Length: 351
Image (tube, rainbow, N blue to C red; front, top):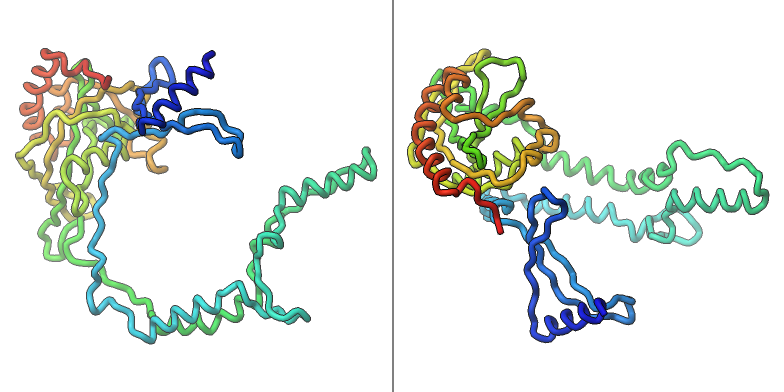
């Protein structure tokens, strides 16, 4: 009866050209996921019944907008005809469909699927053949490198590519480009370089803000997530990207963005300075604390410890160069957080 009901619903949706948008929660305390159910009718050839195909739909906060440079290149960056010909010659020399191997059958095509050994199947059938003749026979030893014969390049093919590679190296010489003036550690004339950054103030349902530091023993080094604004990136996109990269947090929504630009100068122990222009985002975190994960962030661990703390207690515990900015940010965001708490906005969760 249940199967007939599902089949009837699937066929009704298919006939009307409709899909279903549903919310799925995998565990009791898990984050809800949006799913689209697309009807799919039974197929006798594929032996599948009437069913739905489920596709995950991202929340707006999970979509990262990336900007790319213009594809129109400058004239001085265009390769010459000689360089183009050299690149084409290299590609032709690596053609696997017509390789002279010196055999009686003439040129052959290399790496045809039917000629490439699957090391797993090769091992399996070798063991089957051994035991088929003697059920007590000892299995043959494993090859130390079963893929060596498959991955080892053909020597004749490589030798055919050598002249073309040498010609390409001559036509595309490598040259060391000196470091540009005005790097992030300061310019050669002693004036500081400039960086545009975004800071992210994340508040939870209790009205506490997220703070982290690199070492558990460091004093006065708590900070809120922050990072550079990449070229072509707007404030919100940069803030959400940095938060995700540094903490894995993505269950957030924007409450406010600052118009004011906070400025300060960082002085490095090895010399040089960077002048920072920073704006801030206030985000509401509606997820669970288990979402915070430093280990899963692109193999790079930005922080080691983190905590939820009242925003006014944060400025005294940050580095001195940022203390003034944190005091101003705290003064701006505190009334917004309090108003959101009174209105019940901090208890909001996606339906």
